[in-house]
Length: 481
Ligand SMILES: [Zn+2]
Image (cartoon, rainbow, N blue to C red; front, side, top):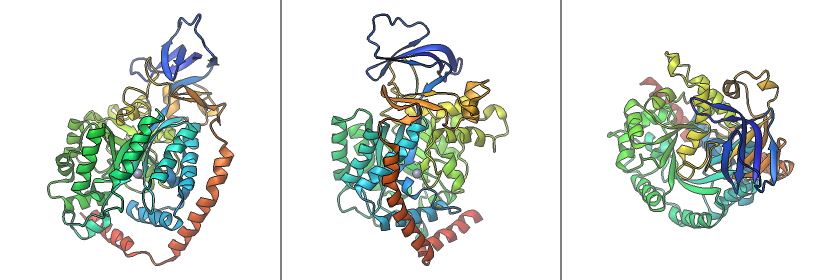
């Protein structure tokens, strides 16, 4: 048993978000009790953590990310998503990273997250030239080795959005079938995970409704229902997708998703920058979760998601970092701050803004709600929840401390993280990662990233591919409307 005592505890409850002088008892990975004067006499407590002067909060939850994109961290600037994605994919294709290299990259991203207080992550995993069991296994091992709670979410697609929107045809587009059917790759992972670590699980990740045929979406929904899995996708991230959706689906993109059974509580949809009123109503009615990725949407010029309108309808909105080359970091504190600030840009009534407390909830309990495997299990420090928590030692940015909730949102960026616990296991202590040698992970990743950089530089000096000028032309049309 572990006892944290004399903690300033962040409950994140609306009425009493902060409680003083709290004890938290952790037994076998679970929070066994929380309170002021717990009856602990005679209990086999093997570790006591003195939290005097410290803040204890639920672990932060990253509900949309691409971990291996860390290999292309900050490679690019001023490119729209579809052009940017083309470069990212071609660079990776040329570098063709091995499973071991993918594992090292994922471990580096997990190390960064843990040290910044992120205890759980959804990795929407895509890789070039394609998925394979050893590559997916490498992500699982990175979760296990670093100690983070992780959801492997293999990205699935059978068509290219730019191709179908340029050709103005979706229904008749020929699906690109992988050599090995996706079910044959994913099912062994599922049975492996069921038998192994309790902290690693699986979701299905149709890349976006545009890049999946009706047939593929139906297969995904069917498997999710059969095995009780969550589904994760990118939804209406860019203006080009909004415009393309109108060209491709006369019934409406939202209607199509409803018809295919994709809108349900199983679904978490990343970005949602361009969802319209009708789609938001349908999402709310079906219990769809939205994942806000503010830094990525800003860097790629995609826009600002209508978080206030979604929250007003009761849609659960959580936070994600997206990848290492779109928000350039894997820290949720940054997304929390942006979520609060950006909600004020287009909302006249200040009562409707995302408050500091709302933003912290988006980064914790709402993240747990977005993932079926985590619902009711993490995101909160309360009896019966898994013990995923962060202890902060207030640094200069939290000094002078006046209002903990406000300051964690508007001042903190991760430097105060002192101790991190995942499933009752301490993985960061005194600000240092315990599970692996940080320097070693950095050393492993550098040569791979350099190789990618060389390929990327070579690509930039070549004539841009036809698809790039197609995207630029399509954007002109989309912005003309
Ligand atoms: Zn993404």
